Amino acid sequence: MVTRVIGASTLSRDLGHWRPSGRHRPVYRALADGIRLLVHDGRIPLGVALPSERDLAGALSLSRTTVTNTYAALRDEGYLLSRQGSRSTVALPRTTLAGRPARAAASVIDLTHAAVTAPSDEVTQAYAAALEALPAYYTGHGIEPVGLATLRQALARRYDERGLPTSPDQIMVTSGAQQAWRLLLEVLVSPGDRVVVDHPTYPNALEAIRRTAARAVPVPLRPREYSTPGSARSSRRWDLDAIRDATVQTGARMAYVLPDFHNPTGALLDVAGRAELASNARWTGTTLVVDESMADLWLDEAPPAPVAAVGHPGTVVTVGSASKAYWGGLRVGWIRASPSLISRLATSRAAVDIGTPIMDQLACAALIERHEEILVPRRAELRGNRDALTAALARHLPDWSYDPAPGGLSLWVQMPAAASTALAAIAPAHGVALAAGPRFGVEGAFERHVRLPYTEGADRLEAAIDRIAFAYQSLKPTDGDYSAVVL
Image 1 (cartoon, rainbow, N blue to C red):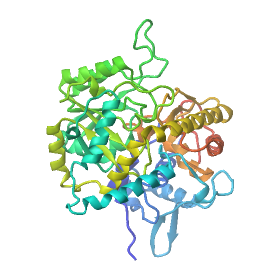
Image 2: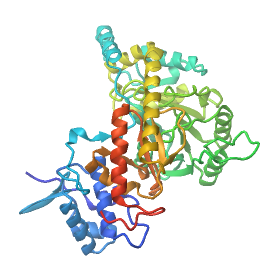
Image 3: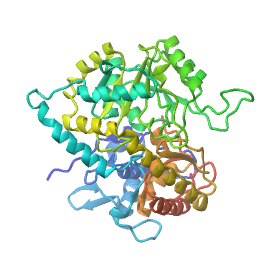
């Protein structure tokens, strides 16, 4: 059987900003950690072979000895399996580096995804209703590039209820919010164009920008303690002046923001900020794409009306998703935009697919009809999970800090040391999988941060934080750097 081999250029690209910042941490060790993190992230599949030592050394401008030492370290740790007469292939180790017995894969607590489980009874009933309604569509061709009328009408009503009058012809149903975002990039952005993003941001949005050959322009979110005495902006996380200036200075064609319980920070943009954000978009002539995937997951207070309610119809586009509110397995998203843009998007979509499955759309429409019935207990559950996570952090990692999250699915936690990549690399061996901070940034930012979702129950969150604390201590990091760590 022929073994699949990852190309050196592909691996070099996916490693991103992996080189050590300090002088005491060996380069081979940093490279091994970067590869190990890609394995745990699933970006290097198990069973494939890494590039030859010569090829990877050339791609990364390293000596071949450095790559040889890297591969040797990965073999010693169980991440590469050697077979005589064939290439070494990627694997997961059977024992931990810290000396604890390895946990079975089934016992690993996965905190890499901020996603809710299904409300089983409601989802089952929604698909039963969809199956009952399906025969009415048998006489047609079953292809609806902009989505079923019944779902677009339901989504339009939801916008009406949230303070944004909407007609069904302003809605396009997509196969998840990620497809919605990619379609917008394909239609509105050309290779080399700039796209302003808040920073940190949703990692799949950054990946889509890269695949479009556009360039992300990051504008940092401010820490919560930022304040201007007497200013209404004192607790606002978004630097709207900086977003406007970055747009003007780079000639950005588009801006992508998550003002409703931002992923990963959970921050919420206030009413005045929404008006200013929309006004700036119109003034600069930039298309503002607002991702509202988390908008229904408010825990402390409901969000203000959508940004599009105070924006010009031609400059503000909204993206939404059923995955966060209902269930990740329901791959239904949507775009709210002008009818003319919806028409352009539908034309472009034909090169990708010809519509979202009818059953999923019918099920989504049925869930929307029971929206509050589903969301009220879900919010209560998430509040309890959030409290359990903060309590566990206080017990096990009291020197880790975070801003309160009034909604969404995660806390954005800052560690004393810049050890996020190394921690995420070893954490699975301790029974927990993490998304390292740099996944949410551009060019290796956020090594001091990690996203911690509170979608698991209290007992599993307690166990997860205990395991993370043990893994973190095994690194023996120092404040400001982890360059002295030898794993």
